[in-house]
Length: 265
Image (cartoon, helix red, strand yellow):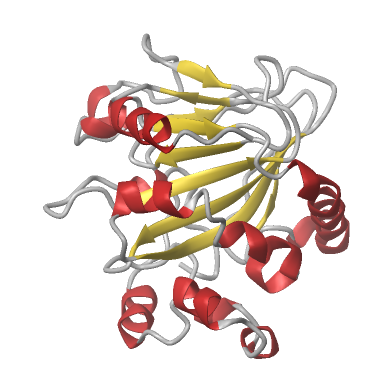
């Protein structure tokens, strides 16, 4: 794929998102197979380590569930984009999957991930969406309000109902194998799936190192899995960081819109 760093950085600054076309096409078969295997194995429990979402399939804690996911976390083309949003000192916040079934009439409210508002140091959340299927105008793609990451506000501060359409919103579509990178302060939310196929993606979500992880990686990943991880991945996961242990155990791990109904609350 052609990679123009300055163009992607400019898009992140201006509109709050950018797309890398065909970044992981070669990995699609293995990732799709493993994600569907996990949905089958976990059944009604899928996603319960963090949050479940009515009407949708979710998986959580993917780092613990196969090294097929590990190569996504430290991708050389993603790191500079995440660093542009967060600064160089960032860590993994969570690694999940979400699948919208055919005919699903549920839409997400516009939200910022973790309910995050930029602070005195700037932005502190960045999300990457790895498209396992096409995102189309019919199948539940993400709607976003360009430039809203710069507002310093959350949708509920300025909208009567964040479930409603925003006059400036646009749909973020793409092909399987593409990656959407978002400044996750951007107002966004997935819409209804009016197609006859699942719309599925993996989310690799990063945060600034001085903030709590959405999902406390050291507390969720099995010890035998942690023991096999290379040093660069251990650093990204903050597995050996006492400050992260304190931050992530003393603070509630939040969703931007899902209710706090899990045992991690």
